[in-house]
Image (cartoon, rainbow, N blue to C red; front, side, top):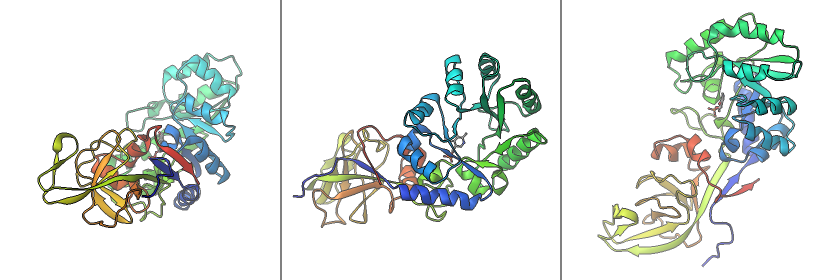
Length: 363
Ligand SMILES: *Cc1c(COP(=O)(O)O)cnc(C)c1O
């Protein structure tokens, strides 16, 4: 028996893939600057190491969702321009945003009030978010010129530009996207400052949305943002490989059931494997019987329920399987997008759902 000489569940993160995916972003939008979304711990890949690689590869700015994420990067001495996508939430955050030289997205009147509460002349670097039709965050389009006037009225305030977010960019046919782009262009016409519209799906599927800055997230990690295209078809490389190990192999008699609830019944005597990974690691409990894992390059189905620390798999097509064999949950050969669709979700949620029980190896 092979000893289990590596940690039980390992996420290998391939930094060469991150670089290659950034190059794909630049190939799609050669004239745009790139603000890489590394919120949510770089979509579960590790914000600090990913930030260092992206900065080394020449990314123009990094975007995070909240203040804590920005501070983590500053504490790790990541000096790139950092954009706070949801802006500041309190007077203390407004102060620190200024002292840490964060670029602050402002999406609401109450945030303007927070910034106006800072001492006169405090240098601040601002993006204004316009609600062009998604109706989540952003100012009404007709407020744009008044916002510009407000910047001029505040010595120290510097306008980086204008951003909006697309609701349906992953559907290349959706009429809302064209409407949003037109709305945003009209709202900001004639005003100074850069324009930014597109996330990953937007920058791939909607050339008119590339504008001055693109804001890719998911595609940097190698997953396709478009339901009708695989990552490979888009020239993307999965940056993460999530692996565990086979820790038991046994033959189970016909008629017996496997796992909690006895939801899977063996139709014949069959070889069953137990893999040391479960929902407490980030393998979604809703993954049904039939969802694939990859062992020795062969897809085998999960059978029965995902438990907290284990899953069970059907090894009938893989008689050569051994205790200690590597089991790929997602990565090259088994795209996270595909596993996500078995769980009724998106690769975004799989990546962000990894827990601190997963051991990370950056290469
Ligand atoms: C997360 C985020 C992005 C990146 O989106 P992807 O779909 O991962 O490319 C872009 N813009 C904003 C405002 C975001 O919050």
